Amino acid sequence: MVLSGEVEVARASHGVRRKFRRFSAGIIVSLQ
Image (cartoon, rainbow, N blue to C red; front, side, top):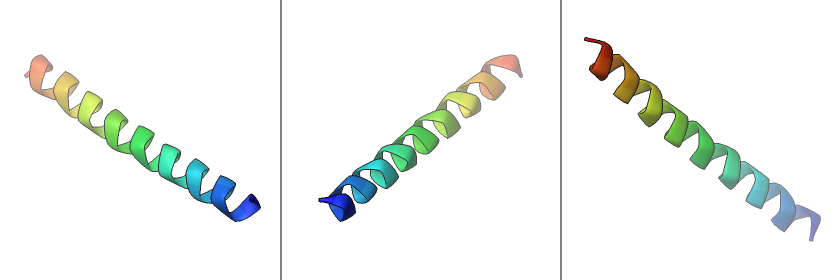
């Protein structure tokens, strides 16, 4: 159960990081 929880948290953080990267890229493109 703890392992599945850690994997879930890692997956969530990875998704958030990917989304944040895409969001920041969109801001940079809009600024240019």
